[in-house]
Structure formats: C-alpha cells, structure tokens
Length: 300
Image 1 (cartoon, rainbow, N blue to C red):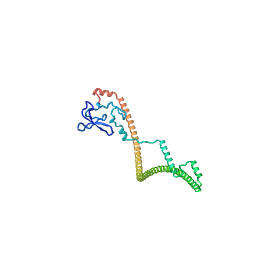
Image 2 (image 1 turned 30 degrees about the vertical axis):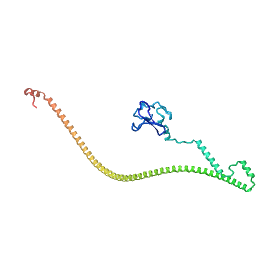
Image 3 (image 1 turned 180 degrees about the vertical axis):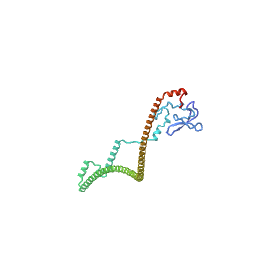
Image 4 (image 1 turned 180 degrees about the horizontal axis):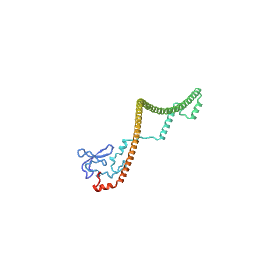
C-alpha cells in the first residue's frame, strides 16, 4: 500500500512487518538509505532527531514517552534474557509432601482391598466363609506389618547412614586440616634442616677460625716472650748506664765542689788584694795629685 504520510515528506511509503510483528514504514532501497530512526521508524535523510515525530509520543508497550510502540524493544529484551524462577521453601515442602503421598498411594494400589473402606472391608471379610481366603488375608496383613517394620528399620538405617555420611564429611574436613598441618610441619622440618645445615657450616667455619686464632695466639706469645727478654736486656743495659752516669755525676759533683772551693779561695784572695790596693791608694794621695798637675792625667 503506497500512501503519503504528510505534505512535507514526499515519496511513497512501504509498510513492512518488523521482527516484533508490528508494521513500520520503510522506504525503497533505490530512493533512500536503509537507515531508520529508532524512535519513529522513518528514514533520517528527511529529518533529524530534534524534528522526530515521536518526541512527545506515548508507548503502549513499556508505558514510557519518547518513541512509538512499533519501535519499542521492551518485549524483545525481556524475551532474550528470561529470568529463572525460584521456588520458595513452602512450595518445595508442598511438592515433597505431594510426591510422598503419591508414592504411598502407588504402593498401596497393589493390594486388592485398597479401594475399599474399613466398614466395607469388615463386611467383606465376614461374608467370606472360606478359611483359606481368611488365612491368605491374614498372611497378607502379616507380610504388610513385616514390610512396615522393614521400612521402619530401613528408615532407621537410612538415618544412621545420613549421620555416618555427616561424620564422614566432618572426618574428611578434619583429614584435610590434618594434611594441611602435616604440610606445614614438613615445611617447618625442612626449614629447620636447612638452618641446621647452615649452623653446621658456621660451626666448621668457627672451628677453622679457632685454629687460626690459636696459631696466632701462639705466635703472639712467642713474640711477647721475645719482647720481654729484649726488654729485660735493655733494662739491664739501662741500669748499667744509669749506674755509670750516677758515678760520673758524683765525680762531677765532687769536682764541682772542689772548683767552687777554689773559686771561693780566689775570690777571697782577690778581695784581699783589692783591700791592699785601696789601702795603698789611701796612703799615697799627694803623689797622685802632683803627677796630675805636671803631666795631666795619669797614664794607664
């Protein structure tokens, strides 16, 4: 069907169904580009986004504004990623109860008197005169009781097995923890062995150093003994020299005392001579004045 949408938009429109089942207009490939507006579904060579017809439009699918319902992708997105449904705990319990009652009814349907009520069953048994049928029914009842007992025993064994399984799980977890602890202990043992090897190597080095130090101590003791002997010899020589120097000092002191005495004697003699000269000068004063007058100063 070819129609004209408006006076402003020229050219025939071809309505074709989209992938959601809603028709939207598309132009022919020979007249325009195959590029449609995602809001109204028209080609973009005629108008721009701000002139779109679906700016204020209302979508009847997603209940939002801004696009037509034929271009809405709400249903497609919801169908592409369906959310998984989760049952509640009450529904899960209800389903398990229904399944249990169904299995019980299925097991009871094997008996011939399953559809009869208690009164009908009692009337049926009273009406039967054959003892063989009664015995057969009694046997069936006994077998049913035994089966119920066996079921109870099996349930008890099942509960025991469940407890054993839980204990096995606990033991498995404990075993895992023990294995981890064992690995940790093995690592600690390896670390201790490595430290012991290092300690052994250090002790060997210490022993070598100890032997070297002992040799050095012996050499030092020898040098010390030699130096002490040299020191003693030097002290003895110094003592001899000091003794000689003391004797020389005493001799020099004695000689000095003799020289001092001689000097004192000489000084005494000199003082005596000076006194004599002074006395002589005092005895001849006139002669000295005469000589000064005649000849001037006295010659020295």
